[in-house]
Image (cartoon, helix red, strand yellow):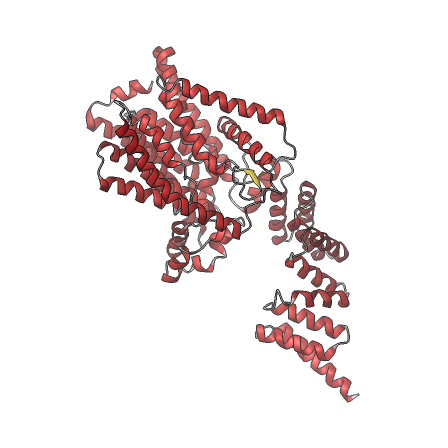
Amino acid sequence: MCNQINKMSVGDDGGRSLKMLICLLLILCCVIIYGQLHQFDFLRYDEEQYVTKNAIVQSGLTWEGIKWAFTATEAGFWQPLVWLSHMLDCQVYGLKPAGHHLTNLILHMANTIILFLVLSTMTGSIAKSGIMAGLFAVHPLHVETVAWIADRKDLMCTFFALLCLGCYAKYVVKQTSWRFTLVIFTFLLSLMSKPALVALPIVLMFFDYWPLKRFDGFNMGILWRSLTEKSIMIILILPVIAMTFYAEARVEALPSLTAFPWESRMSNILNNYVGYLWKTVYPIDLAVFYPQPETRSLITDITAALFIIAVTIMAAVYIKKRPYLGCGWCWYVFLLLPMSGIVQVGSHVMADRYTYVPLVGIFLATVWYVDELIDRYYKENKLVSIGVVLAALGFLMVLSFKQTGYWRDTETLFRHAVKVTRNNYLAHNNLGAVLMEKGKTYEAIDHYQEAIKAKPNFTLSYVNLGNALVTAGQIEEGIRCYRQALDREPNNYTAARNLADALFKNRDYAEAILLYMELLPKMNQDAGLYNNLGVALAMNGRLEQAVGYLERAIALNPGDKLARANLQLLADKIRSGREQ
């Protein structure tokens, strides 16, 4: 089918016209799916750290901000270009979410167009490259990356990686030092956005075989030159990997081998490689967060391993006859590897955003193989074939449009996650937090309890449930939750502080005083803590001692009217006692 379409474009002018038409159609598809983003709000899920509660980012592009961007390890990554992009958004749009969403959409459209142009140039097939880029543009698994402002890093990392691929293709045609410098530069920019595509040099080796056919007329000189080029790129990777591990460790996002042993990691790797393929074919019930499985099946792990081995062997066997299968499969395997679970980051088992680049390999292998089958078996039914392809893309667009709608706001996002997944403790907890903000305390309590039921050792849910119960007037039950949180995490200062406050409200001043005293060295800039401690001491009859803490509260926060009122009442009480 696609070969026939390509034959319709005669000469460079015809090829350019067809490419321009396909680019416009790809942009139109993206706008149809993601045009609704301009109505969406910021999410209370990582976007606070990246934008809405980040004072440095909100200040826009300043020298101080630029210096911070290149030294910060917040959010567990060294990603200076991402921080700069968010600063630029704040400079241009302020805190209007529509503008931030627009930047994500523009980046996705740019990635789609670059992917199409690079592959059509490499392979010489405009139509097949267009269909493949269409899959990239409209697949539901890519919704998370586009709709989530906090995932700007994947969009930017991909943008520079695809530019690197394009520069590399031009370099292979004419191998000059300037062109190779551009390859290195764009690869470095990709790493400075997110160190996800560290395996790109390996993938370029396979692209040397096909579609660039660099090894045709093979000799050792060509192989040595190719290996030298990739070695230079790999050298750039090493410090970025070290920086990433340091950043992840700082935010405690890397579970230990004790908490997450190798057998669990290997199980995740095997099942994720197959699981992402299944979601590619059946992109239903997608969620923002997938919890770790409750149980692991050895049979499932072995089946997944056998499937991966079988596909790898098939790709190797057909490497000469159908090189696109091996190239596509290696793209998928190597570029997914850092996100497969081999390095466990966070507590999720998988994430839709991890497929944004790796699926390009699957799309490539699928489109080229299906085109071969159509040319072989359905040559006389090309219009039907074209109709099937367009219907498939249209169906994916409908699913993506619907999936995008779930990212409208935080409540909608986590309600959907709770609906389509089982025992999703994080979704229940985060939904509870949103409901608390909206004053739906009793509904929030239900979700916090579900979170604890799904993961009994999730300390945050005990703290949040305690907060909700205290708000609902069930102070004794709230105190019990805070104690359970501290049993699981003795150094959780938030739980300890909230417990002290709850004891204070419950008029258990003696224990509240002890807790406040223990917290003072860790929270010595908390004016509220000094105020509560002062009042608790006063209520416990230790009036003279209470004065000092109330004065400290006012010193830390001169505008604290409550502390000033409490100090005045205490002074009056002391004066009255002396007069008597």
